[in-house]
Structure formats: C-alpha cells, structure tokens
Image 1 (cartoon, rainbow, N blue to C red):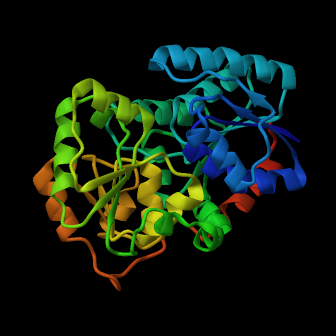
Image 2 (image 1 turned 180 degrees about the horizontal axis):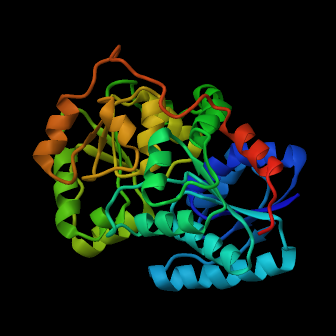
Length: 356
C-alpha cells in the first residue's frame, strides 16, 4: 500500500513522527512537506529531533494570505498526487496544509485519512475551524481522538468511517518524552528552576491580529507573580513590532524552541499559558496546569477536568486563572488513549479498501 502523508507545520511534524514509524513497517509512505513552516527553527530542527525521514517532496510554499497559501498548496499537492497515484492520503489537524491536502486528494478521488477528526471549537471565525470541518466532510477515515469528537461528527451526520483511536500526540510524548528529560538542557541554558516560572506561547490570528488582545495578554504576563518564559513565534514578533506592543520586564523572550526543549520547558513550568491546541494537550499529559488564551477550545475534556481554564485575552481572567490553578495531586484522568494510537491507525488503514 502506498500512502502520501502531508505535513506543513510543527504540530504536524510531531503527530506524524510516531505514525510514520508504524506506517513504514508495513507500507510505502511518501512524505510531503508543504513548507507552511519553512525556517530552521520552525521546521528542520523538528525533523532532526524527531528522527523523521527527510521529506520526499518539499513544496516550499511558505507564508501568505490564507487563500493564496491554500491555493498554492492545492496546486502543488495535486501535482504530487497525480505523479505518485497513492492508495490513500493522510492529513493531520487543522492547518491550511490539512485542507489543501484533503481537497487535492478528494478531487482526484483518493481516499483521505484525517488524524484528529471531529474536533470543534464552534467558532467559524477561526481559519482552523473551517479547515477541520471541511476536511472531515471530505475524509474516508475519520480518526477521532475521543468519544466527544465522535459525537460531534455524528451531530454533523458523519457516522461512516469514524474510529476513536486516541490522540497521536500521546504516542509522540511516549516516544520522545524520556529523551527530552534526559537530553534537553533548556532549564540550565536559560537558568531556570523547575516550578519557579511560567511558560507562555501566543500565535493564533485571533490574538496576533488584534492589537488590543496582544496588549492585554502581554500586560497580564508582565503582572504575573513569577517570571514568564516566552518562545516567540515569528508572526507574533512581526505583529508586535507593527503594532508597537511592548514586552515587560517580567517576560523573557526566547527563540522558537525545538520539540525536546519545549517539552522540558513545559514539564518544568508552574503553569502554561497558551493559545495553542497542541500545547494545551501536552501540558495536560505532563500534568502541568494550563490557562488557554482563547474563549473556546477544541480540547473540551481538559477544561472539564479543571486542568485547563479558558481566559481569553482578559488580564483579570488570566491572572485569576493562574492563581486558581490545580495543585499537585488534583485528580488527573487519562483522556486521550494509551499511546498506541499509531498502531491502531495503521491497522484501520490496512484492513479497509482504499480506492473509492
């Protein structure tokens, strides 16, 4: 069986790492990197750290407006799929790379497997929400991380091809977590003591496009009772310069971090503040409290347990959420599987006919 896997952004590299290993034990995988994240800090270092094979195709699309970027990806991916004629196409998550891959495959009548199917924020102003909804409705295999995701698909009339497989990022954490603990020197490098700092990331359009949101978030970070470590996304850095948003003395800015260092920084944080879906989950798996800098999340189960709090960009809510974070020993149920998701996905793809 020949499978084309499409990735383009750093969360997708993490998700693809364990699945690529399992796929290649039994099948022929062609790895396509769209170039959505294209510099070394956002792309190459992840492939190296995760032990992933060099992509068979690097499309070099780069950044740009959503329509232009997605259109360029669609044309380039279509060319690859016509050349390779795979039995199936795998896409991950909710980026423009995900949507372009699913559209290109569907138009060529190639079955699509969507890893992380069924997630919903119910906010159609988010580009990611549009991407994930459309991708789910184009997919043959909908590989859902939880029962909630399956139920949300059923509410949209999608019941065929749905499989609750758990979250592939649990697999990645099992695969690389020990290496992060043993090899990362991030805390030593930045002179940090575990439990004595907070970790923050900000990159979503809803926060970076709004000068008011950025100012409120950075005002809250500066007012926290412990130093804040902030690996700064290039797009956020650019927008802050354009909008004249200042960074306070309580915030220590770092360059984007590799996966192992980011895991180590999360593990050592007293609390994580983020608008990233992936980091919300990693914080949960690492038993680190999380404050989400959004008013909704796809990962609703983490909020229900009390380990994740939605605070938006409001400084008072952010400060209160950090102060009320769960203490060590707070009940922490396993929500998204046992780290064997990649194997389940390969079994599903291997067992069912692939051509429509």
